[in-house]
Image 1 (spheres, rainbow over the protein chains, first blue to last red):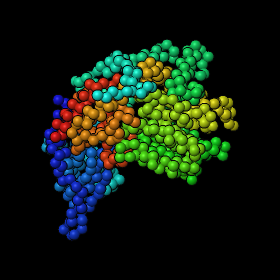
Image 2: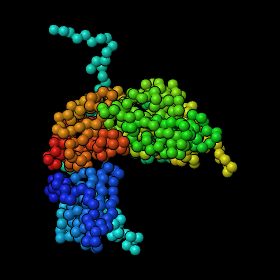
Image 3: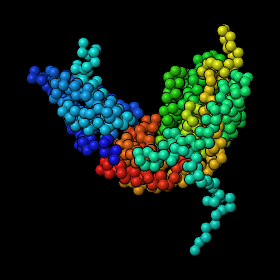
Image 4: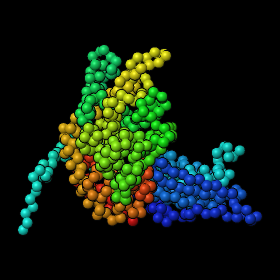
Length: 161
Length: 434
């Protein structure tokens, strides 16, 4: 049944038991100052799904990705997977994963995901075949990008400069 | 044993006009297709309806046989096209009992029809020569309701921002009815315009308008009804309803997309300034200034959607042939059946009236713990097409504390088998997300 490709067990697991859900204050560095952080709230205007992502950065490492939101299983599971994949990673490596996920989602089901890079994110390969749901899966990832930029580690040129 | 005596003159079951639903379904080619390996169960007619072969044939024949531009050609094709276009206008006027075809203005859709009135207000307000009925400023009030589609909300918000007028609204009760408890305060001597949805596209509520009309007349304001969801499903008589404007759209009533209607009282249309300028809407043009054609041409600048208008005329013929009373009754029966059937689904909550009275065949609901997007996706895998989301009526979702709903909506071709399929489909949804 086609549905199984969309609603993989991994996605339903993340939806029912989300990892790292809830917005957290950034931790403190050794010198007592809080880690740099940024937050972004994204909305899918066609369905009303919402997600808030908060990114904390310690040096060149993403020390935490915390989030809250409401929406369909795809968008909320995607936030949980994002948290699992990017928290604790060096900034550069996190953005490599980010790019790989975007590539997977824009591939219309033609991209074979690399499990070493994307981990549980490979479960979203089936979602890429449903254009109406790709936006759901990308919602937290787009919010992450904005939040990271606000934490000073964005990939957009004006932030990098 | 008691005998119930039915009073003389009471309508009887047998008096209700009926039609053969299976014969009607055979007119709609798309209804025989499959979706994801299942027979199509189309429960999204409030979004857009399907088109019968009779309408598609007219659309095709127009382009194959009578294609020409309207109102400007002396040649035969142009004359035929003009006759077909104006003939469609006359059919639509008769369909809603307008006193003249000149009261029917063709637009792109309901949204454009509503915006046309809003911009006429804007233009009249910006000119000292504007008719006082269409002039708005600080201190004036425009009234809508909490259950409007965004198309009957945003244009008035924008108009009020442009003119300094105040936007006010009717609230909605817990049961999904219009809260008229503050009617006399809400519609008052400061009210210039009231624009109200006739049938809610999300709650299914059909608003009773007579008390509102009476109050609007008392204070000397104007009344518009957004009939996008009502004209396709029930008889409409603009004289009987005593309104000033109505808007509706072709694609929800078996017609093509790209064609809608603004009906306005002749004397009001005549008092409205133009909105779009261009060809066809003028009387005489000089570089120093222009004068404008009388309605409806004044509001139809540029080449209109000719074939679409002609096909909408065919749609009106098709619906009239079956009978709007019969269609209304069929949908009432389907709605009653669906309300009962949905009540058997565990964890299902209906937004809007739960009795088939004062409501149409559009039912929004939530399944506890399952997001509408996921409901819609699992239903689609079984060939069942419903709409999910906020249905362009976000204030209604906010009112009931949900981000979105799932909506099943019916039409003349909907069967009880399809309602059964929906209920079975919802069981499957609950299994996937158990």
